[in-house]
Amino acid sequence: MMEFVKEVKIPIGAWVEALVNWILDNLQPLLDAISAAIGAVSTTLEDFLLWLHPFVLAALLIAIGLWRVNWKFAVFVAVSMFLIMGMNLWEETVSTMALVVSAAFVALVVGFPVGVAMAKNDTIEAVVRPILDFMQTMPPFVYLIPAAMFFGLGKVPGTIATVIFAMPPAVRLTNLGIRQVSKENVEAGLAFGCTDRQLLTKVQLPLALPSIMAGVNQTIMLALSMVVIASMIGAGGLGNVVLTGIQRLNVGLGFEGGLGVVIVAILLDRLTQSIGQVGHGEGLVAKVRRLLGGRQPAAEDEQEAKTSRAA
Image 1 (cartoon, one colour):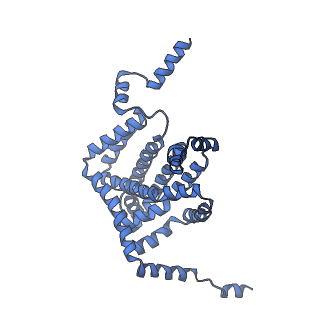
Image 2 (cartoon, rainbow, N blue to C red; image 1 turned 60 degrees about the vertical axis):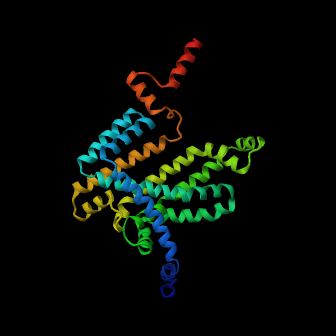
Image 3 (cartoon, helix red, strand yellow; image 1 turned 90 degrees about the vertical axis):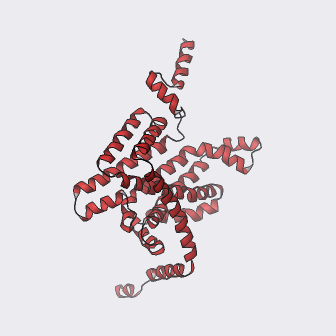
């Protein structure tokens, strides 16, 4: 029996290799177009962030942190920027941030419509769900092989591999958020004469925003987890610093690169979590005035006034 099992071999590897060769021979213009589009997004964003003076970009991040979160997080951003500059990892950090943001942007542009289609059609969901399972369970190192074969080495294949690895949460949570909108809200929208498009944009998407933003957050976190792996095919950034530390057994260098990745992860995580949350709609100028003047938020002022009137 064992001899029979050894003799039987399903040549899946040969079939996959034949498929890859066919794609390389027949779909090269499509691959070039994909590479040019993704390369334009990632390169433009990275060039713009590197063009900004480090102090200007740091000030912008601090202001955004103050506006979207609170003053404590703004202080954390300031300390983090100082630490990154002190470790001489500014360019690597900006490169990593540009790769993660551009990969997350492409993943959302592709994944969001797929998630909406899954929510609207059970057949599409039944077809796409196994594909998402496959994408999430495949070891991330495997994505480097076709990315390098189809697109060569550099930032573009690293971004593409990151997009494929990080896309599933955006699709799943968009689908889940829309499906979890209560039937009462949908029926109310239909009763007021909403078309399918109006029902989606004015009822379902606003109510599904917390779930959708959770998908965005998870997409960014998965993209960051791919940074070090993507550096093996020339993506650069902080992943290259960590990889160099591993190759040289340099614990200090590897720790500095890992610390930079952690800082970027915390910044993007807190900022994406703040989007769509109640209580973060106060303008930046108003927030600065309130902090300098020691005033409490407008919502707290209104609540205090109501309490006083009730008393």
